[in-house]
Length: 562
Figure 1: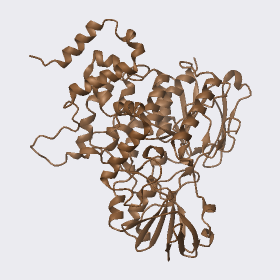
Figure 2: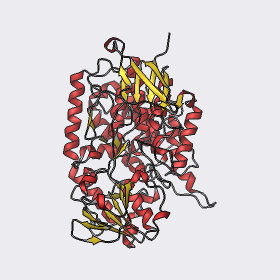
Figure 3: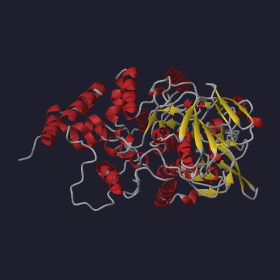
Figure 4: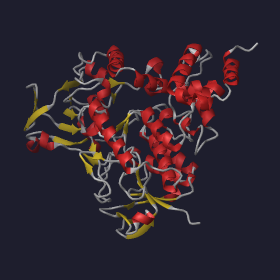
């Protein structure tokens, strides 16, 4: 029987995950990558390419390695927890080589306007006509049974010049953050960075080391998180499944107040002129360990929005003026669009696309088109894209079915309403998802969500790691389709990989435990059981065919051995 052919558009992290998922499901993937290498966003290039994001030389990822890795391929233990973009590329190459993915990638081949079309018999076959073009301009036509779009949402730089009167007559230089590469050119210059997202904060900090003065302009302000969490561990390792449960059941205002209190203990956001009017969970957070230090040392000055430009002079909304400005960097985000698809397939307006679970157009006759990685998570994108690709390929095969069109549209409307209620109005808050809840949502569709209650009764040690430890991607390989035999061991050894890169000086003293998981063992296990029972109270009969035997298993684990 001929294997179903799947077109994968884009060879970044999402594209690689799609190729792997296709192979796992017995599909035949062909990946079209418009550039000369894999890696997508994370591949540094001195000269940015048209209609795609471009990073600066010093970029370090904001998510730690145990949280961002692919679920069946842990990042090497000696790699640092927060990796430079070059190390991320090394990891992608290891992944691609290990699973032999690169032979399915066609480099320097691109799609173009309206080059991905439904076939005339689409309502019956679900097939697509795909036309591609190589770097010599030669075009080729293909027929595919399904298409996966993996170009992300960092596509077109958002440069809102119309909001800045006088910018056309500005005598200095200005550009979007995608065009920033290194700071040396701006030594002893006056520079303004507009925008306090992750890129804006990073670029402001880096430039402030060499500039005469750096001004950071922000309309709203921001809550600033740092990569280094309690006890020096990566911050995102504290985002556990238990924490996600508690955030779900506790009042929103309470969780915001608690977290804002924690952030203000590090530095008072009002004192530093950064405190926004919105709550911490009303906006995508900014991660930056150095920004408070640069403000405290005076090398960064926080300013309000820019009112107008007059030659080389910039006037801000508070009436303050800075003269002789040499450079303005617009760290104002990106827009996404899909010109190779017809607007009747999916339309994008104001960075909004109507997609079920941010993946599937709900009104196609056949579910053979999926968007992978079109989310802005409060966490890592790689494991999300991987889970999405695992679900999509099973839908393509017919092993999983989508709900009715009406049900999908209802879900889309519910998510749009919830997002509008929670987040401040912004083009960056149209595809926002919470890491653990969204991962679980997709995992439910595949049948790979961790069965915590069952684990508490059959393998308490593993259950406590899953419930109380970081929500690492290995959890979604413990059961169901795509189960990986190494998942359990990967979870038990994840803290070893966290501490390994920091232990570079021989020391005979016993190293401290990276997480006091067992200090609160009895208390937290009781809390975990209570929460599991609460959230699964309707399923107890299915998982407790013999309560006495199950209780004996738990007692046997908790009681000390003689």
